[in-house]
Amino acid sequence: MFFRYRYYYGCLTEEQKKIYNTILSGLNTFQKEISIPLIAVDEVTKIYNFVLWDNPMVFYVRDCSLDSDVHNRRCEIIPNYLYKDDQIKDYSNIIIKYLQVFNTQKNKQDINKEQYVHDYCLSNFKYDNSFGDNCYSILGLILNKTAVCQGIAHFVKLAHDYLSVPSIVVFGKANNPASNGRTGIHVWNIVNINRNTYHLDVTFDMTLTKTTNRYDYFNLSDDDIIRDHVVDKNIPACVTKGQDYYTLNSMTVNGLTDLGDFFKREIERGKMDIIVRINNITPTDDTAKNVQEIACNKYIETTKKGISTGVSYNSNQSVFEINFK
Image (cartoon, rainbow, N blue to C red; front, top):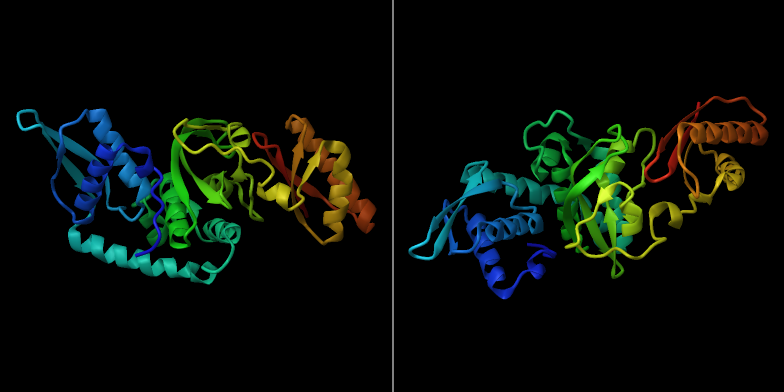
């Protein structure tokens, strides 16, 4: 159908890969019971999850139950299908047709494909705070334009697969700056761009975006992401720094002393919504007030006009958004 990057498949032994393939084949043909060799429950669970994480098109099943036959050394996996067979086929066709919105990007560079997917999600989808129908799968976004982090991350992987960009779904924990400091289970992505791997959290950027797109979590290294994410040791290391969106687009400064010149440049460009990452500071409400004051003074100095400003900030990633009103 199209490119599929199966990172988790590659993490398995040869025997485990055979079981993975058996499970995937069974799910693709909607088998009510999938028979595999008898192995530990934890191992079955791991392989089953790897199948789902690698294959977003298997949107029609979540959990499963197990029935072990010790005498015959077999284990029966009983998937919990969410829809009837005909519904699954119809939904699959809808999804494949929907992915054509990305056709314009097929000949672009991988980094451009990635940003297009990121921006498309921010412009067309919203986070599902009500946990409605299909919120955990790609169907939530395609049918309802809303999903939780799991559905969003699976869609992001599916879109990258469609555009032949290697990516994976990552399960872990995180502290969303838009959720008042609460840490909880979270799902995001890792992408491979020009043979380097980076963290990409579209959900977090989606919840931060208001007047303009945010890129606080676009191509971060491990050192950057661990400020508010718990990184699993079994995922690819993301060691390359300086390839995040803000660095590449000259939207960072090293401390408050460089902030005035940055604001002057952006104001002269006519920007009314300005985003900047400020390194080497501790983001606090007092810091935000200082940033707001510098921005307001620089606007008056540059334009000779009065202005009021609003400021918000992501303390985890030291990113500030200033809105001139």
